[in-house]
Image 1 (spheres, rainbow, N blue to C red):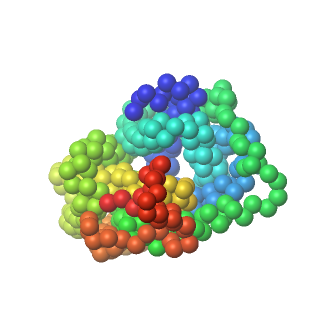
Image 2 (cartoon, rainbow, N blue to C red):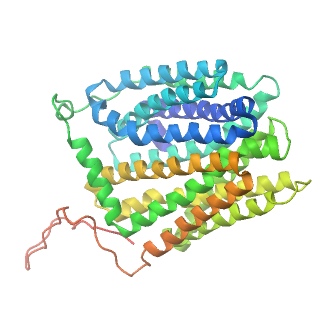
Image 3 (cartoon, rainbow, N blue to C red):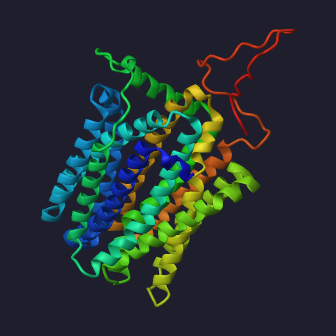
Length: 437
């Protein structure tokens, strides 16, 4: 996996991704503590709304920017978005009203929605070989998992010596370092065929065809149901942690990143065990079983919150977060394998883009639901309702995903199929496979 880092250009891009993710993790912790300072018991509602704004930016702005990004020099776009993100983050410590948080989060995530698709489109141009690109995808997933563990630990260490407002400064430093690394990199030119002027409806046509492809393929519909289950459990963790730690359990601010770190540790542990588990059980068995764990964990959380807290409450919360992180990782990590095995190679970009948008739409629903329920009905009610949502997603996935050998319709009929080979004629190359088990 690490051999791909021998490519100097990709090595700098990956370094930019790592430092930016580390900064983002610090901002997540700091934003939770800022919301608690401004809103107190309503912090979950504030966080839920702020994170819903983030998801709305990804769902609505990213496709628009993706349609226009090729008209702007790629490196200039990436560097300018890093500078914009650093500027917005530096303003967060000075907010005094909740609405100011929402405005700044919208600006921050609009910049991220422009940066992320452009960055993702750059990597395959830097690594045209499929094996190198696959290794880069694996490294990117590992970077996201490490960020969910390392950033909370780093935040906990920093909070022992500085106020949480300084975490935003660390975030800005991460974005600036990312911009410098991208600025020092020579990126490949976008092909001339992709930079022609004039209206470009093809980007939206590809997005629409990708959504039709996802909805027409049973395994991909099941994957969407699994995304809903993960979003329900993840929303309870990311929105409710600060309220549970600071208000329900009465613990210090430094314990907030420790709880989030337990969630990240579970995610990494599952990611390390997954290759062996997938060889033994296959994607369907592993992902569906992990999905059932998610509502069970939320149900245990709701039951625990229904009784007065005690000495057992803190370790129990860490254990539930560890299990939730592991189950969520076991569902999400093999998702790319499922997409790749369900559609033709030519349709992979549209399928991945559609799944990106639809999965973020799930978070767009669960974030505000978790936040406002926790603020109005209490954390126990929020966990119980989101457990039901996660259960519906898990059950829907079980019903939608055909068992191995049961057969499955191919992609949307509009896609052109290879002509059948004529009898007595030698074929110089193997025919493409439309789906894999």
